[in-house]
Length: 316
Image (cartoon, rainbow, N blue to C red; front, top):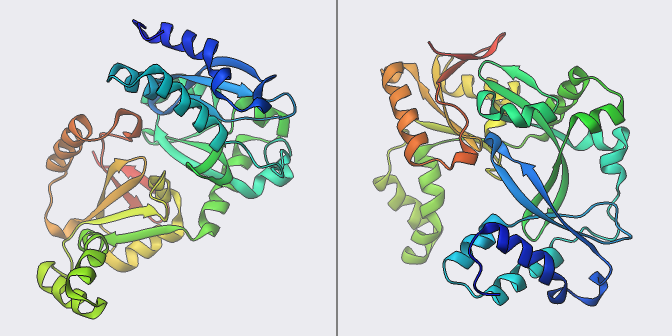
């Protein structure tokens, strides 16, 4: 079984063998594969291990495990890791399926996400969405946390039809929840570096006060570059749709600034008074997206501004 030549053979081996690596309670589980369209139309192969008495179950994407196998990891160890991933990501016994099926319950947990319109032609065929410039707003239900982090499920056209609501209603609820969450963060690059370095300096100098004094000499108070995200720094660029967050930014750095879409997780703001040239910013965005940003996390090659009554606008 360790002479697998390609990804198809690998997925077949997983289907045939994974049950032997799972606890006895999975003996009657239904095991299958599915193709899932992720951000920027990336197609991934998901492993579904569904218990007969469960309405939902996690999807385990197999591409990363195949990479581990190709890098030399023994298939037995890979299968053990897949099984461990499935066991660790089981939904709690008290999970309320109405968080997905019942709109009245689900509506409290709906949040928007910001993705690129043209990079997600296939995905947007399956999802209710709103278009803003070259971006699209899609929606997800936040289901809480497990050992792997935040859990969520995307809102599809099928689910929207089941709820019997319009895209306009969905969008309004999602934005309302976003603004009420008070989860946005806005910091200068200096502040971010300070947070990253503070604990190290406390260990070196013995106390927080001494560490902060050292930081004052190491970093400038402001550097003209700011980062907008959220508490978890996951899907944080959607805070660009949070008018309260954007009004806070205007109070801090003024009305005239450029927005660089660093990724789906964050956006960078640069005050126009810094003298930056839009064409140079666009070149920088393209270079960073090409060389640094993961394909699934890319948001846009454009730069933007934000106006109080019109929201996001592409800078031509």
